[in-house]
Length: 495
Image 1 (tube, one colour):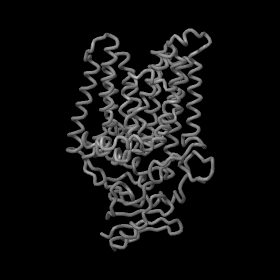
Image 2 (cartoon, rainbow, N blue to C red):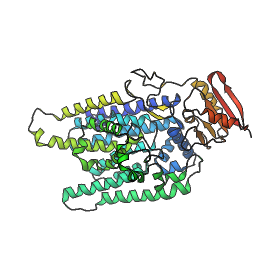
Image 3 (spheres, rainbow, N blue to C red):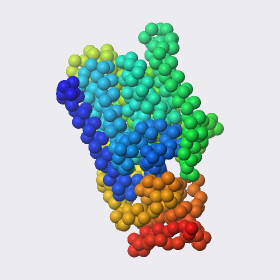
Image 4 (tube, rainbow, N blue to C red):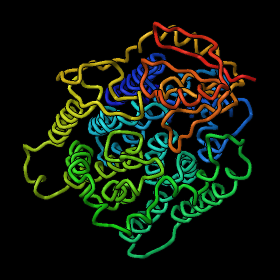
Protein backbone atom coordinates (compact mmCIF):
# COMPACT_ATOMS: atom_id res chain seq x y z
CA UNK A 1 0.00 0.00 0.00
CA UNK A 2 2.98 2.27 0.60
CA UNK A 3 3.62 2.36 -3.15
CA UNK A 4 0.24 4.04 -3.62
CA UNK A 5 0.62 6.59 -0.84
CA UNK A 6 1.77 9.41 -3.17
CA UNK A 7 -0.88 11.99 -3.98
CA UNK A 8 -1.21 11.22 -7.74
CA UNK A 9 -1.58 7.48 -7.10
CA UNK A 10 -3.95 8.03 -4.22
CA UNK A 11 -6.12 10.32 -6.36
CA UNK A 12 -6.40 7.56 -8.99
CA UNK A 13 -7.45 5.02 -6.35
CA UNK A 14 -10.06 7.40 -4.92
CA UNK A 15 -11.34 8.11 -8.43
CA UNK A 16 -11.69 4.41 -9.27
CA UNK A 17 -13.53 3.62 -6.03
CA UNK A 18 -15.80 6.65 -6.44
CA UNK A 19 -16.77 5.85 -10.02
CA UNK A 20 -17.36 2.15 -9.32
CA UNK A 21 -19.47 2.94 -6.24
CA UNK A 22 -21.57 5.57 -7.99
CA UNK A 23 -22.48 3.41 -10.97
CA UNK A 24 -23.11 0.29 -8.87
CA UNK A 25 -25.60 2.24 -6.72
CA UNK A 26 -27.09 4.13 -9.69
CA UNK A 27 -27.67 0.99 -11.78
CA UNK A 28 -29.06 -0.97 -8.83
CA UNK A 29 -31.58 1.81 -8.24
CA UNK A 30 -32.40 1.88 -11.95
CA UNK A 31 -33.12 -1.86 -11.87
CA UNK A 32 -35.21 -1.66 -8.69
CA UNK A 33 -37.32 1.12 -10.22
CA UNK A 34 -38.20 -0.82 -13.42
CA UNK A 35 -36.05 1.45 -15.57
CA UNK A 36 -34.00 -1.38 -17.14
CA UNK A 37 -34.99 -3.83 -19.86
CA UNK A 38 -34.94 -7.57 -20.45
CA UNK A 39 -33.00 -6.75 -23.60
CA UNK A 40 -30.18 -6.75 -22.83
CA UNK A 41 -29.86 -6.64 -19.05
CA UNK A 42 -32.53 -9.15 -18.04
CA UNK A 43 -31.24 -11.79 -20.43
CA UNK A 44 -27.72 -11.31 -19.00
CA UNK A 45 -28.98 -11.80 -15.43
CA UNK A 46 -30.92 -14.91 -16.48
CA UNK A 47 -27.81 -16.28 -18.21
CA UNK A 48 -25.68 -15.67 -15.09
CA UNK A 49 -28.35 -17.32 -12.91
CA UNK A 50 -28.48 -20.34 -15.20
CA UNK A 51 -24.67 -20.61 -15.26
CA UNK A 52 -24.52 -20.32 -11.47
CA UNK A 53 -26.88 -23.31 -11.41
CA UNK A 54 -24.79 -25.34 -13.86
CA UNK A 55 -26.67 -24.58 -17.10
CA UNK A 56 -24.59 -22.79 -19.72
CA UNK A 57 -26.65 -21.29 -22.54
CA UNK A 58 -25.23 -20.02 -25.82
CA UNK A 59 -24.71 -16.52 -24.40
CA UNK A 60 -22.58 -17.87 -21.54
CA UNK A 61 -20.49 -20.11 -23.82
CA UNK A 62 -20.24 -17.51 -26.59
CA UNK A 63 -19.18 -14.81 -24.12
CA UNK A 64 -17.18 -16.78 -21.52
CA UNK A 65 -16.61 -13.67 -19.42
CA UNK A 66 -20.21 -14.23 -18.27
CA UNK A 67 -19.11 -17.54 -16.74
CA UNK A 68 -16.57 -15.59 -14.69
CA UNK A 69 -19.34 -13.20 -13.64
CA UNK A 70 -21.60 -16.16 -12.76
CA UNK A 71 -19.13 -17.23 -10.06
CA UNK A 72 -19.77 -13.96 -8.21
CA UNK A 73 -23.46 -14.37 -8.99
CA UNK A 74 -23.34 -17.81 -7.33
CA UNK A 75 -21.94 -16.16 -4.21
CA UNK A 76 -24.58 -13.41 -4.24
CA UNK A 77 -27.46 -14.16 -6.68
CA UNK A 78 -28.83 -10.67 -7.22
CA UNK A 79 -28.91 -8.23 -10.12
CA UNK A 80 -26.62 -5.92 -8.14
CA UNK A 81 -23.84 -8.47 -8.59
CA UNK A 82 -23.63 -7.97 -12.34
CA UNK A 83 -23.78 -4.17 -12.30
CA UNK A 84 -21.27 -4.08 -9.46
CA UNK A 85 -18.96 -6.50 -11.31
CA UNK A 86 -19.06 -4.37 -14.46
CA UNK A 87 -18.74 -1.04 -12.62
CA UNK A 88 -15.66 -2.24 -10.74
CA UNK A 89 -13.97 -3.60 -13.87
CA UNK A 90 -14.67 -0.49 -15.93
CA UNK A 91 -13.30 1.72 -13.13
CA UNK A 92 -10.27 -0.58 -12.91
CA UNK A 93 -9.48 0.41 -16.51
CA UNK A 94 -8.04 3.66 -15.10
CA UNK A 95 -5.14 1.65 -13.66
CA UNK A 96 -3.52 0.52 -16.95
CA UNK A 97 -4.13 4.01 -18.36
CA UNK A 98 -2.27 5.49 -15.37
CA UNK A 99 0.59 2.96 -15.59
CA UNK A 100 1.01 3.39 -19.34
CA UNK A 101 0.97 7.19 -19.10
CA UNK A 102 3.42 7.13 -16.17
CA UNK A 103 5.89 5.02 -18.12
CA UNK A 104 5.59 7.02 -21.34
CA UNK A 105 5.37 10.55 -19.91
CA UNK A 106 7.59 9.97 -16.84
CA UNK A 107 5.32 12.22 -14.78
CA UNK A 108 2.85 10.80 -12.28
CA UNK A 109 0.66 13.90 -12.28
CA UNK A 110 0.27 13.70 -16.05
CA UNK A 111 -0.51 9.98 -15.66
CA UNK A 112 -3.10 10.73 -12.97
CA UNK A 113 -4.58 13.33 -15.32
CA UNK A 114 -5.11 10.75 -18.06
CA UNK A 115 -6.60 8.31 -15.55
CA UNK A 116 -8.95 11.07 -14.37
CA UNK A 117 -9.98 11.86 -17.95
CA UNK A 118 -10.77 8.19 -18.42
CA UNK A 119 -12.97 8.12 -15.31
CA UNK A 120 -15.03 11.16 -16.40
CA UNK A 121 -15.05 10.31 -20.12
CA UNK A 122 -18.69 10.77 -21.29
CA UNK A 123 -18.61 7.84 -23.71
CA UNK A 124 -17.45 5.58 -20.87
CA UNK A 125 -20.36 6.75 -18.74
CA UNK A 126 -22.65 5.92 -21.65
CA UNK A 127 -21.28 2.38 -21.70
CA UNK A 128 -21.97 1.91 -18.00
CA UNK A 129 -25.38 3.58 -18.04
CA UNK A 130 -26.73 0.84 -20.30
CA UNK A 131 -26.37 -1.72 -17.50
CA UNK A 132 -24.37 -4.93 -17.81
CA UNK A 133 -22.99 -5.94 -21.21
CA UNK A 134 -20.31 -8.56 -21.62
CA UNK A 135 -18.60 -6.58 -24.39
CA UNK A 136 -18.17 -3.57 -22.05
CA UNK A 137 -15.71 -5.64 -20.02
CA UNK A 138 -13.23 -5.67 -22.89
CA UNK A 139 -12.34 -2.04 -22.06
CA UNK A 140 -10.08 -2.68 -19.05
CA UNK A 141 -8.70 -5.94 -20.46
CA UNK A 142 -7.67 -4.36 -23.76
CA UNK A 143 -6.04 -1.50 -21.87
CA UNK A 144 -4.16 -3.97 -19.68
CA UNK A 145 -3.11 -5.91 -22.80
CA UNK A 146 -1.49 -2.82 -24.30
CA UNK A 147 0.26 -1.97 -21.03
CA UNK A 148 1.66 -5.48 -20.53
CA UNK A 149 2.86 -5.49 -24.13
CA UNK A 150 4.80 -2.26 -23.55
CA UNK A 151 6.58 -3.75 -20.51
CA UNK A 152 7.04 -7.12 -22.30
CA UNK A 153 5.17 -9.32 -19.81
CA UNK A 154 3.89 -12.20 -21.97
CA UNK A 155 1.95 -14.08 -19.29
CA UNK A 156 -0.13 -11.14 -18.00
CA UNK A 157 -0.55 -9.96 -21.62
CA UNK A 158 -2.06 -13.29 -22.71
CA UNK A 159 -4.30 -13.40 -19.65
CA UNK A 160 -5.62 -9.91 -20.39
CA UNK A 161 -6.06 -10.71 -24.08
CA UNK A 162 -7.98 -13.91 -23.30
CA UNK A 163 -10.34 -12.03 -20.97
CA UNK A 164 -10.87 -9.40 -23.66
CA UNK A 165 -11.59 -12.10 -26.27
CA UNK A 166 -14.03 -13.78 -23.90
CA UNK A 167 -16.04 -10.53 -23.82
CA UNK A 168 -16.92 -10.34 -27.52
CA UNK A 169 -16.12 -12.07 -30.85
CA UNK A 170 -15.32 -8.66 -32.37
CA UNK A 171 -12.20 -8.60 -30.19
CA UNK A 172 -10.83 -11.24 -32.57
CA UNK A 173 -10.69 -8.52 -35.25
CA UNK A 174 -9.21 -6.08 -32.75
CA UNK A 175 -6.57 -8.66 -31.77
CA UNK A 176 -5.49 -9.08 -35.39
CA UNK A 177 -5.19 -5.30 -35.72
CA UNK A 178 -3.21 -5.29 -32.47
CA UNK A 179 -0.83 -7.89 -33.91
CA UNK A 180 -0.39 -5.73 -37.01
CA UNK A 181 0.45 -2.70 -34.87
CA UNK A 182 3.07 -4.82 -33.06
CA UNK A 183 4.65 -5.80 -36.37
CA UNK A 184 4.80 -2.16 -37.45
CA UNK A 185 6.18 -1.25 -34.02
CA UNK A 186 8.91 -3.89 -34.36
CA UNK A 187 9.83 -2.68 -37.85
CA UNK A 188 10.01 0.95 -36.74
CA UNK A 189 12.50 0.02 -34.02
CA UNK A 190 14.71 -2.50 -35.84
CA UNK A 191 13.98 -1.88 -39.56
CA UNK A 192 13.45 -5.62 -39.69
CA UNK A 193 9.99 -7.16 -40.08
CA UNK A 194 10.04 -10.02 -37.57
CA UNK A 195 7.10 -12.06 -36.33
CA UNK A 196 8.03 -11.85 -32.65
CA UNK A 197 6.50 -13.65 -29.70
CA UNK A 198 3.78 -11.06 -29.01
CA UNK A 199 2.35 -10.98 -32.57
CA UNK A 200 2.52 -14.79 -32.78
CA UNK A 201 0.81 -15.21 -29.39
CA UNK A 202 -1.85 -12.67 -30.37
CA UNK A 203 -2.66 -14.26 -33.73
CA UNK A 204 -2.67 -17.76 -32.25
CA UNK A 205 -4.98 -16.69 -29.39
CA UNK A 206 -7.41 -15.05 -31.83
CA UNK A 207 -7.41 -18.16 -34.05
CA UNK A 208 -7.98 -20.59 -31.18
CA UNK A 209 -10.79 -18.49 -29.74
CA UNK A 210 -12.43 -18.33 -33.18
CA UNK A 211 -12.30 -22.14 -33.40
CA UNK A 212 -13.78 -22.39 -29.91
CA UNK A 213 -16.64 -20.05 -30.88
CA UNK A 214 -17.34 -22.05 -34.01
CA UNK A 215 -17.74 -25.32 -32.10
CA UNK A 216 -18.69 -24.98 -28.45
CA UNK A 217 -21.73 -22.60 -28.25
CA UNK A 218 -23.66 -24.45 -30.98
CA UNK A 219 -22.92 -27.99 -29.76
CA UNK A 220 -22.84 -27.85 -25.98
CA UNK A 221 -25.13 -25.03 -24.88
CA UNK A 222 -28.27 -25.27 -22.77
CA UNK A 223 -31.04 -24.80 -25.32
CA UNK A 224 -33.25 -21.79 -24.84
CA UNK A 225 -36.21 -20.84 -27.03
CA UNK A 226 -35.42 -17.11 -26.97
CA UNK A 227 -31.67 -17.53 -27.53
CA UNK A 228 -30.48 -19.02 -30.81
CA UNK A 229 -27.14 -20.74 -30.33
CA UNK A 230 -26.13 -20.27 -33.99
CA UNK A 231 -25.67 -16.51 -33.57
CA UNK A 232 -22.99 -17.07 -30.94
CA UNK A 233 -20.61 -18.94 -33.23
CA UNK A 234 -17.85 -16.89 -34.83
CA UNK A 235 -19.38 -16.92 -38.31
CA UNK A 236 -22.87 -16.67 -36.84
CA UNK A 237 -21.92 -13.34 -35.31
CA UNK A 238 -22.28 -11.80 -38.76
CA UNK A 239 -26.04 -12.03 -38.22
CA UNK A 240 -25.57 -9.14 -35.79
CA UNK A 241 -23.05 -7.21 -37.85
CA UNK A 242 -23.00 -8.02 -41.55
CA UNK A 243 -19.98 -6.38 -43.23
CA UNK A 244 -21.08 -7.60 -46.68
CA UNK A 245 -23.84 -4.96 -46.66
CA UNK A 246 -21.21 -2.20 -46.90
CA UNK A 247 -20.10 -3.36 -50.36
CA UNK A 248 -23.61 -3.25 -51.78
CA UNK A 249 -23.95 0.49 -51.14
CA UNK A 250 -20.72 2.01 -49.77
CA UNK A 251 -21.70 5.63 -50.45
CA UNK A 252 -25.08 5.11 -48.82
CA UNK A 253 -23.41 3.59 -45.77
CA UNK A 254 -20.96 6.48 -45.58
CA UNK A 255 -23.67 9.11 -45.89
CA UNK A 256 -26.16 7.50 -43.51
CA UNK A 257 -26.68 9.75 -40.43
CA UNK A 258 -23.42 11.53 -41.33
CA UNK A 259 -24.02 14.60 -39.07
CA UNK A 260 -24.76 12.38 -36.06
CA UNK A 261 -21.70 10.24 -36.76
CA UNK A 262 -19.54 13.37 -36.99
CA UNK A 263 -20.86 14.72 -33.67
CA UNK A 264 -20.31 11.36 -31.99
CA UNK A 265 -16.74 11.06 -33.24
CA UNK A 266 -16.04 14.66 -32.24
CA UNK A 267 -17.30 13.88 -28.72
CA UNK A 268 -14.90 10.92 -28.58
CA UNK A 269 -11.77 12.61 -29.87
CA UNK A 270 -12.18 16.26 -28.80
CA UNK A 271 -11.47 15.57 -25.08
CA UNK A 272 -8.21 13.98 -26.29
CA UNK A 273 -7.53 17.03 -28.51
CA UNK A 274 -7.48 14.55 -31.42
CA UNK A 275 -4.05 13.44 -30.20
CA UNK A 276 -4.52 9.82 -31.38
CA UNK A 277 -3.99 11.22 -34.89
CA UNK A 278 -0.36 11.83 -33.87
CA UNK A 279 0.09 8.18 -32.87
CA UNK A 280 -1.78 6.20 -35.51
CA UNK A 281 0.27 3.08 -34.95
CA UNK A 282 -0.89 2.96 -31.33
CA UNK A 283 -4.46 3.75 -32.30
CA UNK A 284 -4.49 1.15 -35.11
CA UNK A 285 -6.43 -1.52 -33.09
CA UNK A 286 -9.26 1.01 -32.77
CA UNK A 287 -9.57 1.47 -36.53
CA UNK A 288 -11.82 -1.58 -37.20
CA UNK A 289 -14.56 -0.22 -34.95
CA UNK A 290 -13.98 3.32 -36.19
CA UNK A 291 -14.72 1.95 -39.67
CA UNK A 292 -17.93 0.37 -38.37
CA UNK A 293 -19.06 3.73 -36.98
CA UNK A 294 -18.23 5.63 -40.17
CA UNK A 295 -19.85 3.06 -42.46
CA UNK A 296 -22.78 2.15 -40.23
CA UNK A 297 -26.23 1.85 -41.78
CA UNK A 298 -29.34 -0.17 -40.80
CA UNK A 299 -28.44 -3.09 -43.14
CA UNK A 300 -25.02 -3.37 -41.47
CA UNK A 301 -26.55 -3.65 -38.01
CA UNK A 302 -29.82 -5.34 -39.02
CA UNK A 303 -29.22 -8.16 -36.53
CA UNK A 304 -29.53 -5.83 -33.56
CA UNK A 305 -26.38 -3.68 -33.59
CA UNK A 306 -26.68 0.03 -33.29
CA UNK A 307 -26.99 2.79 -33.83
CA UNK A 308 -23.30 2.74 -32.95
CA UNK A 309 -22.89 6.52 -33.15
CA UNK A 310 -24.57 7.08 -29.78
CA UNK A 311 -23.29 6.63 -26.24
CA UNK A 312 -23.92 2.97 -25.47
CA UNK A 313 -22.06 -0.31 -24.99
CA UNK A 314 -20.83 -0.14 -28.60
CA UNK A 315 -18.25 2.51 -27.68
CA UNK A 316 -16.37 -0.18 -25.74
CA UNK A 317 -14.29 -1.30 -28.73
CA UNK A 318 -12.71 2.10 -29.35
CA UNK A 319 -12.38 3.74 -25.91
CA UNK A 320 -9.16 1.94 -24.83
CA UNK A 321 -7.34 2.94 -27.99
CA UNK A 322 -8.49 6.55 -27.83
CA UNK A 323 -6.61 6.77 -24.53
CA UNK A 324 -3.62 4.72 -25.67
CA UNK A 325 -3.34 6.85 -28.81
CA UNK A 326 -3.94 9.98 -26.74
CA UNK A 327 -1.05 9.16 -24.37
CA UNK A 328 1.41 8.53 -27.18
CA UNK A 329 0.15 11.56 -29.12
CA UNK A 330 0.63 13.68 -26.00
CA UNK A 331 4.17 12.36 -25.62
CA UNK A 332 4.96 13.16 -29.23
CA UNK A 333 3.54 16.65 -28.88
CA UNK A 334 5.65 17.40 -25.79
CA UNK A 335 8.76 16.24 -27.63
CA UNK A 336 8.10 18.44 -30.66
CA UNK A 337 10.65 21.18 -31.25
CA UNK A 338 7.90 23.80 -31.38
CA UNK A 339 7.00 23.26 -27.73
CA UNK A 340 10.50 22.50 -26.49
CA UNK A 341 11.55 26.00 -27.47
CA UNK A 342 8.79 27.66 -25.44
CA UNK A 343 9.66 27.58 -21.74
CA UNK A 344 6.28 29.05 -20.76
CA UNK A 345 4.50 26.05 -22.21
CA UNK A 346 3.70 23.39 -19.64
CA UNK A 347 2.31 19.92 -20.39
CA UNK A 348 -0.18 20.46 -17.60
CA UNK A 349 -1.81 23.26 -19.58
CA UNK A 350 -2.85 20.76 -22.22
CA UNK A 351 -4.30 18.44 -19.61
CA UNK A 352 -6.34 21.26 -18.10
CA UNK A 353 -7.71 22.07 -21.55
CA UNK A 354 -8.57 18.40 -22.05
CA UNK A 355 -10.47 18.34 -18.76
CA UNK A 356 -12.39 21.48 -19.69
CA UNK A 357 -13.43 20.00 -23.05
CA UNK A 358 -14.29 16.63 -21.48
CA UNK A 359 -16.53 18.24 -18.83
CA UNK A 360 -18.14 20.46 -21.46
CA UNK A 361 -18.96 17.47 -23.67
CA UNK A 362 -20.37 15.60 -20.66
CA UNK A 363 -22.57 18.58 -19.79
CA UNK A 364 -24.33 18.66 -23.14
CA UNK A 365 -24.16 15.01 -24.23
CA UNK A 366 -24.44 12.76 -21.16
CA UNK A 367 -27.72 11.63 -19.61
CA UNK A 368 -26.02 12.10 -16.25
CA UNK A 369 -26.12 15.84 -16.83
CA UNK A 370 -29.46 17.65 -16.26
CA UNK A 371 -28.85 19.31 -19.64
CA UNK A 372 -27.91 16.14 -21.55
CA UNK A 373 -30.16 14.80 -24.29
CA UNK A 374 -32.02 11.63 -23.21
CA UNK A 375 -31.13 8.54 -25.19
CA UNK A 376 -33.31 5.45 -25.45
CA UNK A 377 -31.40 2.17 -25.10
CA UNK A 378 -34.43 -0.10 -25.42
CA UNK A 379 -38.13 0.29 -24.73
CA UNK A 380 -38.52 1.71 -21.23
CA UNK A 381 -34.74 1.88 -20.72
CA UNK A 382 -33.22 5.34 -21.11
CA UNK A 383 -30.13 7.32 -20.15
CA UNK A 384 -32.57 9.49 -18.16
CA UNK A 385 -34.32 6.86 -15.99
CA UNK A 386 -37.07 9.07 -14.65
CA UNK A 387 -40.29 10.72 -15.82
CA UNK A 388 -39.70 14.22 -17.14
CA UNK A 389 -41.28 16.94 -19.21
CA UNK A 390 -39.91 16.55 -22.74
CA UNK A 391 -40.38 20.29 -23.38
CA UNK A 392 -38.24 21.28 -20.39
CA UNK A 393 -34.57 22.23 -20.74
CA UNK A 394 -33.65 20.40 -17.56
CA UNK A 395 -34.37 16.88 -16.36
CA UNK A 396 -33.58 14.76 -13.34
CA UNK A 397 -30.68 12.31 -13.47
CA UNK A 398 -31.40 9.92 -10.59
CA UNK A 399 -33.70 6.92 -11.24
CA UNK A 400 -37.26 7.13 -9.98
CA UNK A 401 -39.76 4.29 -9.70
CA UNK A 402 -42.54 3.66 -12.18
CA UNK A 403 -46.10 3.98 -10.92
CA UNK A 404 -47.15 1.24 -8.43
CA UNK A 405 -43.69 -0.35 -8.52
CA UNK A 406 -44.15 -2.01 -5.10
CA UNK A 407 -47.39 -3.67 -6.22
CA UNK A 408 -45.75 -4.69 -9.49
CA UNK A 409 -42.96 -6.34 -7.46
CA UNK A 410 -45.59 -8.44 -5.72
CA UNK A 411 -47.15 -9.48 -9.04
CA UNK A 412 -43.72 -10.52 -10.32
CA UNK A 413 -43.26 -12.70 -7.24
CA UNK A 414 -46.51 -14.55 -8.01
CA UNK A 415 -45.26 -16.01 -11.29
CA UNK A 416 -44.05 -19.60 -10.64
CA UNK A 417 -40.34 -20.04 -11.28
CA UNK A 418 -40.84 -22.81 -13.84
CA UNK A 419 -43.28 -20.74 -15.96
CA UNK A 420 -42.38 -19.04 -19.22
CA UNK A 421 -43.64 -15.46 -19.27
CA UNK A 422 -44.77 -12.90 -21.84
CA UNK A 423 -44.42 -9.34 -20.59
CA UNK A 424 -43.06 -5.85 -21.27
CA UNK A 425 -39.37 -5.04 -21.58
CA UNK A 426 -38.92 -3.19 -18.23
CA UNK A 427 -40.84 -5.90 -16.35
CA UNK A 428 -38.93 -8.72 -18.04
CA UNK A 429 -35.66 -7.70 -16.37
CA UNK A 430 -37.25 -8.66 -12.99
CA UNK A 431 -38.29 -12.16 -14.15
CA UNK A 432 -34.81 -13.62 -14.68
CA UNK A 433 -34.83 -16.27 -11.94
CA UNK A 434 -36.27 -19.09 -14.06
CA UNK A 435 -35.12 -21.85 -16.43
CA UNK A 436 -37.95 -21.01 -18.84
CA UNK A 437 -37.95 -18.28 -21.53
CA UNK A 438 -39.06 -14.70 -20.94
CA UNK A 439 -40.79 -13.30 -24.05
CA UNK A 440 -40.98 -9.56 -24.63
CA UNK A 441 -43.43 -7.62 -26.78
CA UNK A 442 -41.70 -6.06 -29.81
CA UNK A 443 -38.50 -8.11 -29.32
CA UNK A 444 -36.69 -8.88 -32.60
CA UNK A 445 -38.73 -11.42 -34.56
CA UNK A 446 -41.66 -11.14 -32.13
CA UNK A 447 -44.64 -13.45 -32.64
CA UNK A 448 -47.58 -14.04 -30.35
CA UNK A 449 -46.56 -16.93 -28.10
CA UNK A 450 -48.47 -19.19 -25.77
CA UNK A 451 -46.38 -18.56 -22.68
CA UNK A 452 -47.37 -20.10 -19.35
CA UNK A 453 -48.06 -16.63 -17.92
CA UNK A 454 -48.75 -13.13 -19.20
CA UNK A 455 -47.94 -10.17 -16.95
CA UNK A 456 -48.80 -6.67 -18.12
CA UNK A 457 -48.87 -3.19 -16.65
CA UNK A 458 -50.70 -0.60 -18.75
CA UNK A 459 -48.64 2.20 -17.18
CA UNK A 460 -45.28 0.73 -18.19
CA UNK A 461 -43.76 1.20 -21.65
CA UNK A 462 -43.63 -1.60 -24.19
CA UNK A 463 -47.17 -2.98 -24.02
CA UNK A 464 -48.72 -4.41 -27.17
CA UNK A 465 -52.42 -4.20 -26.35
CA UNK A 466 -53.55 -5.79 -29.63
CA UNK A 467 -51.15 -8.71 -29.03
CA UNK A 468 -52.64 -9.29 -25.57
CA UNK A 469 -56.20 -9.08 -26.92
CA UNK A 470 -55.43 -11.63 -29.63
CA UNK A 471 -53.81 -14.09 -27.22
CA UNK A 472 -56.46 -13.76 -24.50
CA UNK A 473 -59.32 -14.09 -27.01
CA UNK A 474 -58.05 -17.58 -27.87
CA UNK A 475 -59.69 -18.77 -24.67
CA UNK A 476 -56.51 -20.45 -23.46
CA UNK A 477 -55.91 -18.07 -20.55
CA UNK A 478 -57.60 -17.18 -17.30
CA UNK A 479 -57.06 -14.01 -15.28
CA UNK A 480 -55.26 -15.05 -12.11
CA UNK A 481 -54.65 -11.71 -10.41
CA UNK A 482 -55.50 -8.11 -11.18
CA UNK A 483 -55.09 -4.59 -9.87
CA UNK A 484 -57.54 -2.72 -12.13
CA UNK A 485 -56.97 0.76 -10.70
CA UNK A 486 -53.26 0.40 -11.40
CA UNK A 487 -53.66 -1.41 -14.73
CA UNK A 488 -51.74 -4.53 -13.64
CA UNK A 489 -52.96 -7.95 -14.77
CA UNK A 490 -51.59 -11.49 -14.51
CA UNK A 491 -52.93 -14.29 -16.67
CA UNK A 492 -52.12 -18.00 -16.48
CA UNK A 493 -52.48 -20.49 -19.29
CA UNK A 494 -55.22 -23.03 -18.74
CA UNK A 495 -53.57 -26.40 -18.16
